[in-house]
Length: 254
Image (cartoon, rainbow, N blue to C red; front, side, top):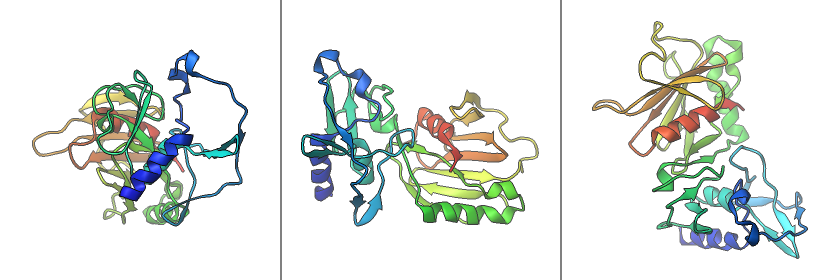
């Protein structure tokens, strides 16, 4: 972990804070001529890694004046090191114990309090994981269901774990540290899917229903998108309603 913190701290020298440029005061900006360097390959823990922004777009290293600059938030996420940006203080904080009051997520949205509990980060999946999703979806007898859908954003403190086998004949599960995303090919609720709860409009255009935590159940969110019946279930109290809504709104076809 000490090595990870050192690497993440070194990255701040050449950071690219995705989506944050607009919050800097104009007097602090200096125009430069730099180059997107698509010839540099990145490895994390011996495995090829492609940095991506909050919108899922690939990010290339930048070369300027003989130095190479890497996207600090994306690399910090890959190294599992917390990173926060405070617009009011003009400060990037990396590592545990980082101050996050009035900080912003990679998308540039502001929040107050503990950012690790209120923001989201981009998540990507390997070709092998996407293939596992396709295979898990192929046994439902619905050709279109073999197309994998998954969140492209997760809670800033969350992490993708694995693709689970089909849950009986009902759904395919994507497991994360703090939530489960279940996808079914049809409405098996007897018409009750999405009833009750609080209605929310999601960024992907779907209409969702949020169900708050109770004494016996954790928070969840249900919605239908392109013939997929999704249910996001929190596994503990770490994911806020705002995070679940943002994650649900990022679910899209891979």
